[in-house]
Length: 263
Image (cartoon, rainbow, N blue to C red; front, side):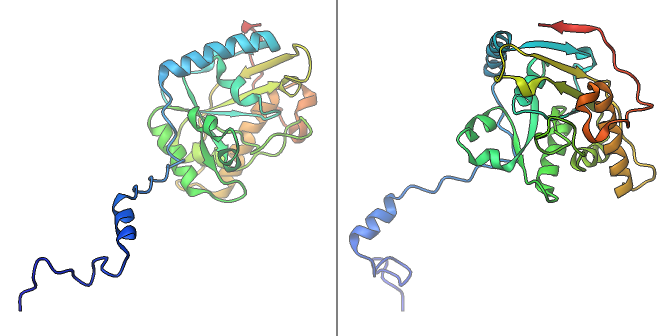
């Protein structure tokens, strides 16, 4: 027997009140979840305006000295690996780099009040204390696109304002991608916004390409590569900032001493 087209099938909302059926029809579809591992592409003009504002603010509140800025390549993928003394390191290190820097930032930043700003500036999250494969894939994708990726090898700010042991993430990404790593040393930032116009210094070292000893990347390769970068950072810092890497910078080339931009 053919079913009358005007009849309601069992799968329809025959058992629901008319108001519920009407509300269901007009209900807005759920918004798709944002993929935080895909960094927001900040409009270049807006990013440049923010940089210019940053120049003015920094010139007012601190005295900034930059060394080795010419070591930053004009194009191509690059990993920035700085030591980490204070949250102000995050905007200060890329401020005078003409190219945008995409940061790998701790997941907690994306749940706070300034989460919108962190995302707007192009950062993506990483879960600390575990192997976050999604973050590693996101980092590798950004490097494939020829971007500069900023990673703090220590994983978090140093409470003692001296270098702490480096973690494996930065070296693992560098070994897997073959992208050069630029060690960056910053000091004095722990006094920014706490003293009147303190001196803050940033040294950008020469990029180094990390390679495994064999065909496959081993844990020893990762540890050796991490130590190599951390020792290079230590060699660019004053002795009192070297922390656990005090005395381990022997054999690392001394950084250049000519300031290219000093304020």
